[in-house]
Length: 314
Image (cartoon, rainbow, N blue to C red):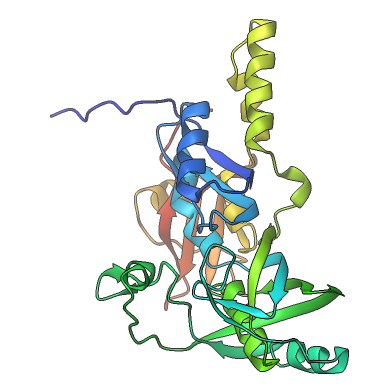
C-alpha cells in the first residue's frame, strides 16, 4: 500500500523568525509553513503572545532536530513593572496586589544577585508544563492551583540595565526551563513591592545570531518582490533558511566514509576513528561533509544513530 502524498514541498532548514507582539508561536508557525509551502514544520519552544523576538522554526527534516534547541540556553531582555503583582506575572493578568516601592539601588542589586548562578525555581501556574496530562495554565484559568515541584535552573548572566520610575530593565542569559516571569515575580516579592513583566524579548537561542532574524513583514515583502519580478517566491525565501544541522552544531562532528555512513543510514552502530568517548555527535558523510543525522556514543564506543535525515534531493 503506497503512502499518501504529503501536501507541500520538501524544504529543509531553520528560519529565525522575529516574532511580533500578540502573535502566538503556533500561529507564527502555521503562517510560515504556508508561506514556504512546507510539508512539515515545528517550533522549538513557544514564546508567549506578550513576548517578541527569536523563534527558530524548523521546516522539513529539520523538525527532527528541534528538540536540541528546546534544551539550549536563551537570552532575554525584560522590563519589570515594580509595585504591582498580577495573577499571571505579566501585563495580561489581573492586578492582585499593589504596594509601595521602598527599596534602594543596593537592595535591588542584592536581590538580583540572589538569582545568579544555579538556583531552584517553582514554575508559574501560567506555564505549558503538564500536571496529570493537563497544562498548568488550563488549571490556572479555572482558578485551580496544583502542586509544582521546584526545578534546577542556571542564570549565567543577569545584567542590570536601568531603573526609571516603576520600571526595571534587565538582560538575562539562562538555561532551558527558566521562566522569566517567575524571576520577575520572585524579584518583586524579595523587594516587598511585587512586580510583573510588561515587556519581554528573546534575543538569542543557543548560538544563533540575532542579525539573522527575519520578521513576518519581511517575508511578505519578499513574496511581493518575487511577484513583481515574475519569479518563484522560494528563490527569495529559501536563502533565509539556516542549515538543518545548525540545531545541533554544538555537537562534535564525526565524518564518515560513504561506505561506513551506509551502515548508519540502515540504523546500525559503527566504529569511527577520532570519535569522542561519550555524548551526542553530529554525523557527516564523505568529503562534502553532508549532514546525515545525530548519533550517540554507546557503551562499546560505537556511534549509534539516534536521528537520521531521510534522503532527499536538494
